[in-house]
Picture 1 (cartoon, helix red, strand yellow):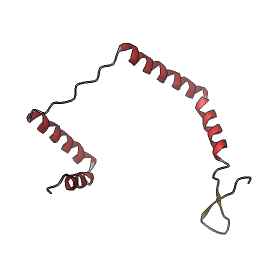
Picture 2 (cartoon, helix red, strand yellow):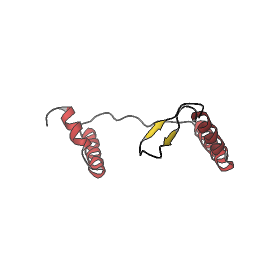
Picture 3 (cartoon, rainbow, N blue to C red):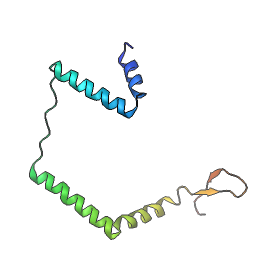
Picture 4 (cartoon, helix red, strand yellow):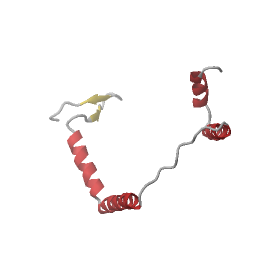
Length: 100
């Protein structure tokens, strides 16, 4: 293998464990070669608190069933666009016209 694309193709065929090993090897080589690593990201306490509050609010909505109501509404809007109907005489699927 001599080109980056050949190496990328070979890496894509590796198992997840082998990919992790490769990443660790490359990171060690970069450090040994003196490559500059990206600096850690810094977030303010307020920023992180707002993420946590938003996540907790979303979870509360989910527990109350708000997400279920959203999915029901979304499905009702999509129904006229595409309805999969299984023919009794065929194993294929067909697009049903709106108004059905």
